[in-house]
Image 1 (spheres, rainbow, N blue to C red):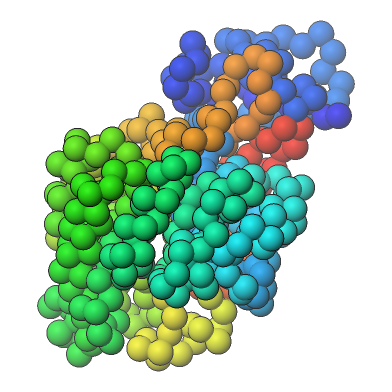
Image 2 (image 1 turned 45 degrees about the vertical axis):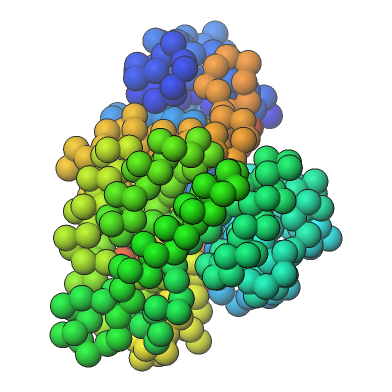
Length: 428
């Protein structure tokens, strides 16, 4: 079994005595054998030396919002392709949404998905649908799916519109401390909206989706939480108005947490002036002013988790006029670079906060173990370089779908590799 020696890397691992220090890390038989300032090997045969000046290492990253295409939509992206995309993005764990075909709304389907993905390098975790068929009417088999391994319950890309259903779900999941994830969006206010309602939508002559859709739905969610306190995760947040509401609500509700996708902190509706359907998302990209205000909410600590909102779409869904195109963007591979350029380099957050947002907090919210970077522990590490420049091209996309508007763009900040157990996945 191969061994690895990470040399002179800056370790970001909350709780470790080596946190923020430059160290060597020796991995043998899939476990961390030694951590020290400088490790001298008596016998280096069979040891792969990994050295990159300026590199950082942290516990493996975890993405709480991934849209699954397999089963049912494998022509967009298979499990294997998603596994490779996640590794390229620096992720060692994923939480997958249930909007597949068939929908993950019963324990039999859930167990099948767990079995199909158990041998991948990346840890695949699954949500169960909140309602049968994600139709938003009848409560799905949440108790059975909980015991089968579902970490949370959500209708994913179908925000729950029925208050009675959401309340029943809160009451039912509370009996086993289940987590509900829901996107705050009142669909009755959206009509045929295609993008954020504002000056840009007026300029382009497109029907808009108002901020009001998010704030009204959020107010409803919070009132239901008042009535039936439970574990509840709002995701993805897209407007600063909703963030302001959540600031005080989080102090009131201990089980309330908030996530947003990196796109809402880095991209605005001005991107749509290009009419590129790859910028079409749900919720939509908001105004540049909203982006800056949401960044401030991140800095204040209102947002607990950053996600990629990775969603593969094929040519059939994207090679259309903007109004007919489906929402979604491939975003695992570009996730760190976007955050680095727009959040870290601009000093809105530092790298220590970054690790909290993408590694520590997601696992805390989902009640799963946080990888410890300590001697004797299994290796679960992401290696990255915040100053390394690279060009994002199609060769970085293992998926059949290629729906990223960032292809061809030069980026700063790159994931160098993932070390999980006894396997090292280099991106060079």
